[in-house]
Amino acid sequence: MSKVRHPKVVAANDLIEGDAVWLDAEGVWVRDIREAEVIWDDARAEALLKAAEKQTLKVVGAYLVEVH
Image (cartoon, rainbow, N blue to C red):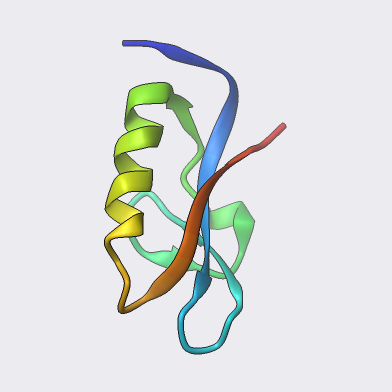
């Protein structure tokens, strides 16, 4: 299992409202970054990002953000 240098979260924009949203540990999009799942593993981060990019009826522009 590889480790990232800095933890990351998955971010996107809500498709309808355009708000910034983050993916939580249950796979739910939340509007408060403090509720986002902090990901320490590169492989998990990439897998969650790929899954998020497929949620085209909920969000657009999914990407990983380093958090400190």
